[in-house]
Length: 315
Image (cartoon, rainbow, N blue to C red; front, side, top):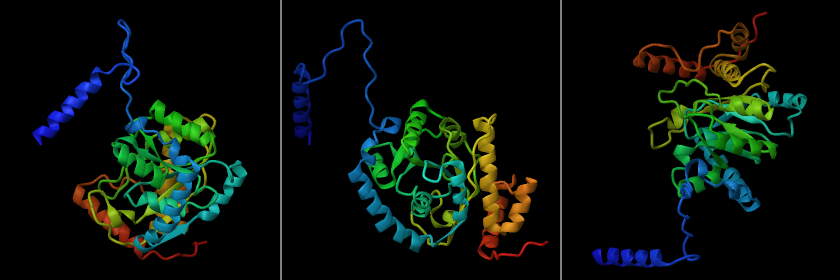
């Protein structure tokens, strides 16, 4: 082993003695050297993943692998697709859309990729955490090819990430993003960050709120092996930012819309609409109580969802 290391060190030394053009030209004296090029994180190049061969490969993965796996593992019930017809009135039925969903599990992305309808499904990119999915070139390549992922900074709205997402939306690509910035640590939601709202305002495109119910039971944060369970994917009414609305207020309105969809998934449509109209939908983040009581309350909510029955409105 030491002999091999010695030979490698000698080879590196010989390469280091070679001059231009076999190695990079030296930086002139008095000139600040450029920062080293990175190929991970937000600097990961994903253009190749939107080429025609990569799109064909992703189509085969989504329809031939993800869809059968999700049908077995998640058994999804998809609701609210009729609400997407309202995009026609917003000049967005064939245009780019931002899908914003809550985030409890790694199952969320393949579940969304197989339930988002046409014409958006196969022209969709996924905003993925740059510090998680793009830490290495191998992991980033897999995420970009399999999910159409692009690196997004989740701690802030970074210029590089925002420019990439804006350019893609301008080219007609729709975006799937999880405004919470990461998976739920305890099964309850987390406050929405402003990335989805900022991009909607900047690109002037509608946002479709989506609620995912039950994915935390399949593969919650910290678990290694999935446990099959039933899930519900509920699409909400498309939202557009108001003329005087900033990203913070629009993000709050988007979070309230997803909370109303969560209420709909765990109760019934009519009562959820009544509470949403009154502004009393239960928060996604859960009750502000002790940890063990939050776990108990979450289990009670899940039990209500499993035995949920539709009721006629009380007129």
